[in-house]
Length: 124
Image 1 (cartoon, rainbow, N blue to C red):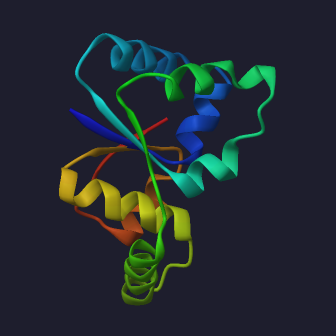
Image 2 (image 1 turned 90 degrees about the vertical axis):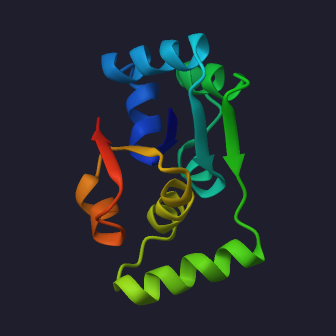
C-alpha cells in the first residue's frame, strides 16, 4: 500500500492521534510506502520535542519527501487553474497520490476531493 500525508495527517500524528500512531506502527512494520510533499513538511515542522512522532516517521525507510521543483510547480499550478482551487500543498498531495494509486490521509477530505474526486481518502 502507498499513502500520501497532508499537513492535517502530520498534525494528527504530532497530537498522538491513535489512528495515526497505529498507521505509524504499521508503516514501520510493513511494506507501506509513505510520501510527504516538501510543502506539507514545511507547513508542519517546527523541530520541537512534541514532534517526536513525526521525527520517528521521517526516519523510517518507507518515507519519501517529495520535492517541489520547477517542473512539479508548473504541474501544481496548472492543476490549481483547472480546478479553481488555491491550496498549493493540497494540489501537490493530489498530484503525488494520483499516479501511485495512493491513499491520501488528511484532516480535510473536502479540500482534497475538490482537487481530485477520484482519489481514495482516509480522514483523520
